[in-house]
Each structure stands twice: as C-alpha cells, then as structure tokens.
Length: 152
Image 1 (cartoon, rainbow, N blue to C red):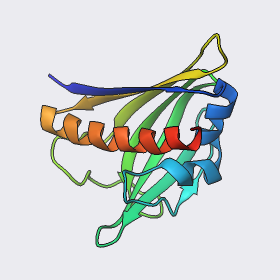
Image 2 (image 1 turned 180 degrees about the vertical axis):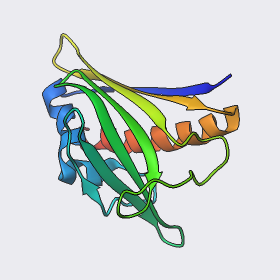
Image 3 (image 1 turned 45 degrees about the vertical axis):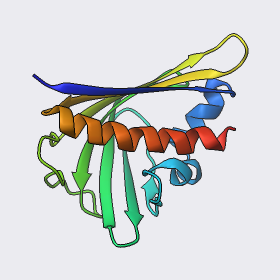
C-alpha cells in the first residue's frame, strides 16, 4: 500500500497567471521550499521531455536539489512530472528519508473559476508510509502557502 498527498488552493488570478509560478524561474524562487527556506536554483525547462532543476536551503540545513522531469504539459491546465532527489548537477541520488520513493510522480491541475480565479491542485503519489506522506504534505502545504501569498 502506498500513500498519496494532495493539496488545493483557490487563487484570485486566472490560470495563465498561476502558470507563471511554474514556468518562470523568478516566480519559482519565491515559493519553492517550506517556510524558512529559500530557493537559490530554479532552472526551468517546462515542456514535455524537459526538466527543471530546483534547490532549497535554510541556515544550518544545507542545500537539497530536485529535478522535475515533465511527461505531460497542457498549458494553463495540467503538468505531470516526476520528482527525483539529485545533486547540484541533476544526477539522481537516494531520497534523504526512508519511505520516499526514488521517483515521486506529481500531477498539477489548474481549473479556471467563473469569477476569474483558479483552483490549483497538486497531487504526489507513492509514499511507502503515512509518516513520509505526512512530512511531504507539510512541506507542500508550506510551499503552496508561499505561492498563495504571491497572489494575495
């Protein structure tokens, strides 16, 4: 049995504006990483077959790198990618905790709302324990809180 993580935010801007948070390095650096973390690296190649390299760091924590390798892109509607833990050059390595898979599939959806806003949903798949899923959920929630603050 695996455990999935899902989080949703309602944002007051149209999907095309929220999409920028995923395709723009400048936007991504503003929200990637839990509270107290910064994102010094955000090399974005948002296209099917493309790959984004991101990092997050906090004082006394070191720097953690991930790649997001995209399998499906529907502009302003859907992004599907696999997250991997990597080194600064993007070479994969084992996750920093047990029960996190080497490859974590993600699906991000952008749903337009009648009043002009967007419902953003991020789903992560395949954690081997409820504890690992809960830790990831906490980080995702904090990232999305930072994203939401951009559009407040």
